[in-house]
Length: 434
Image (tube, rainbow, N blue to C red; front, side, top):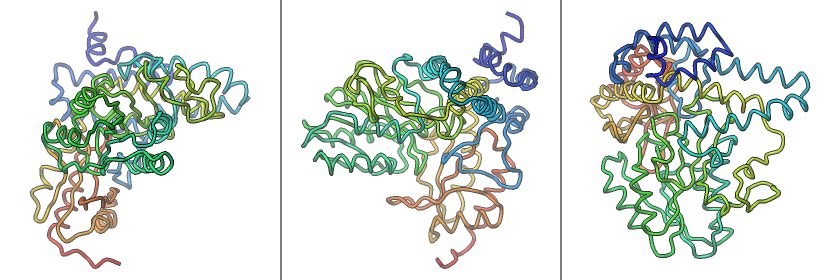
């Protein structure tokens, strides 16, 4: 292999670059130039290479007047993904029923293969949809559960999923068994035991949130799943915040059912998602919307959505290519480095309270911080008014702080402003609540 192919293959980027060249050849030339700066660098060293990540920042179109640190809500798309989306959108408008249904729709199987490869599963186990809520609700409402069956779930699960389970409880008289997970999570055995203690002979489902939205803590999904399977339970895993954030394959988690929003960390178009169901489980889940065989074995029964956004769906492929160009492990390393950069400073400030673990196996790019005497929304407002730093306030259970989520386009100067703002907050008395 020549030097170019060696570098690109080592980054897992050769095929992705060739695909991206079809959208923007100049982007590909620039990437090869900047990839040279990472030659012989470890993941930890490349995480600190500001020249390379500065180029990545230029690949986005984010505002220069706003520091966006709420990427856990929804991530922006790189310009090359936007360009692909616009191209497909314009094509569709030339003749919608022809170009959407007869041209773009034919690309779904190729996209399914790309997603399956990224997920490390079979293509026939992947359904393409609009978000985590749609995917997980499909499973929650589609499973054959009867009165008295039990489901174990956490008070730190996402509200849309908790509400879906409450609806099934109200409608079908199943029993929800709620657990509390300590924040931060810093010990596998403790977390597994909490789930295990909640399981009884009537437990059918264990619902797990892979990375907790409120705090950024990573839950030991595989250890919980293995324990649950030994006890005869099935496992649903909410991967909204974990997928394309830190590097893993769905198979690694042990989940029977998994869903994610691709407009989060994959940086795909808004309103795009995926659902994974283990092949032998597909027949056990009824289609949420109408289907010729709602109890069949074909994963495509979950894609009967009617007219959908074909342009945004097809642009998912470009987002996968961009993700692969950077490399999953390299991206994880950068996100964790950014979190550690600000969090290790902020946690030492007076009155600081951080419910997020700083151990590398228990968090990646997301962390939450609060200050004694302050309400989360007051901290959020102070940072925005003073520095135009956009975060989100989190008040849930005993968590009262702002969630800070950088992305690969975030630079160190942005985080220096964040630390400066948090330092000011730590020295002040909280203003009265309005």
